[in-house]
Image 1: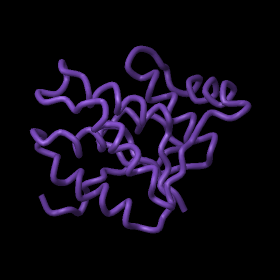
Image 2 (image 1 turned 135 degrees about the vertical axis):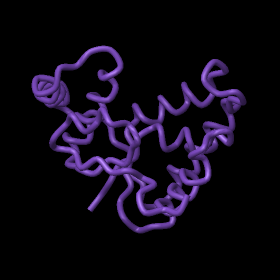
Image 3 (image 1 turned 135 degrees about the horizontal axis):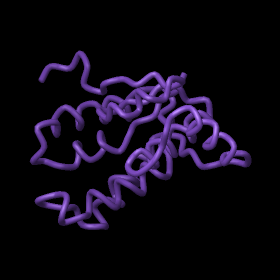
Image 4 (image 1 turned 90 degrees about the vertical axis):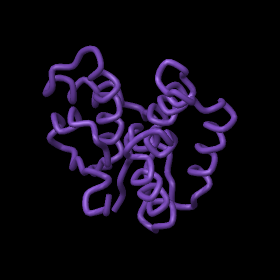
Length: 148
């Protein structure tokens, strides 16, 4: 069994000013310490770098080196698998977007959804409700059941 995590969880874990910071940090630690295969898409990792270091998004953005260090720590976990687009990805993406009208901000979500579908990953932890549009995904709240 495997799962993936959307960028918003990583961003909350890095943003100490976020109301979700402590929950996201605990959730990520439990994932890293767990034994289940933990999938990360390159689009997710690159979005993390873009957003976590952006001064217009975070009141206290991370330095590039700090954000890279966070990613390196995740990638060092033995049960982390990084997903890339394989041969045939374009066909999977087109099939996913035929089912869900896709434009604007939904494009990167459809990209990640198609990547997960191509690799057989069905569970995605995110607070982004747009992923519920992709009926093949089991979208889960990463903080469900956690004491706030």
